[in-house]
Image (tube, rainbow, N blue to C red; front, top):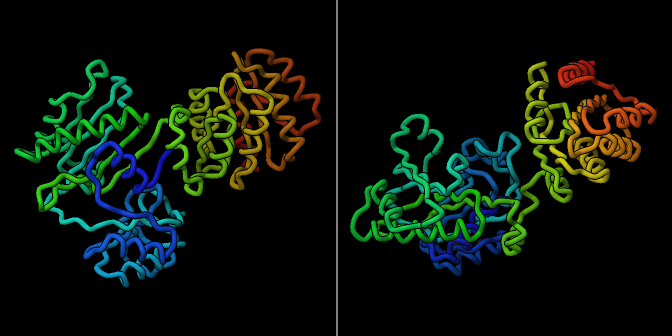
Length: 397
């Protein structure tokens, strides 16, 4: 689960991290009032969407060359003008894709005098099962581009959970940044605070880009992005309350209610599979035969009839889906349960696109019998390769 910048900064502020003063705004008048409260003389008006690259983004509704989604303002009139252009319009960035995201809220923040921009992030390193720091002097830039062009400018290290964060970790950050004296002490303190916040709130990713050195000699988190481990959200009702469902795909929201692993994609073949590995293999073979998957959907190993029905409805709710492939290997999951769920869903919502079903494993013959005797127009497949070829052929007519 992701949250907005202003929410992320509020979380970091609770752990003592240095952030600028700022106030969220949902209307133009709230934006102006926020600026009045801050007092100026320099304001930053920031579009709040779940995507990076806002500063270089473009609004669909504004003329080509118009300013991006993060702008400086030196008066209340400028704040008002920027808010009027941003709120309700669609911001397109390198991370939103061409569809963009509609801006429904702003963050009005004190301006900062910047001497240097740095990059600092924390994430879970799956190879070591530890929290890792990623540090670079190239703040404010696309970190992926830095990694590709100048990888030597990125320093990484992980923290042993047995010891937790230690002063030498902070000193490693300060050294990577080339900071000395009081700034080095600030880096040690900030490193500890960010790690503490990361662990305490079950974060999956925390990115500060840029982390700035102000002309006054202070480290400050000028931007902040936080993603949380969805499996741990039950421990953090305060974080769940920050969820902005307008930033999420409605189908993914519905899937989360049934504990389904679902990710919407851009293809035309809907997939319902049990097991992440099998789901990936199913998507790969669809691409092998020249089509694109419309989703990743893993119903899990212990899905019920109701869960399968919900999964099928989510797939058919996507207008881009021109065909559906159900690929189930029944271990814990029984093939007859899948068959009953598919029939219930088709009976409820109807079937307007080709449906190919491949079942194998526990109660496979019973599952096939249930589907065969249902009277549905379902194409049966013997194996995954056969299923992929049949659904691709059916979609192509």
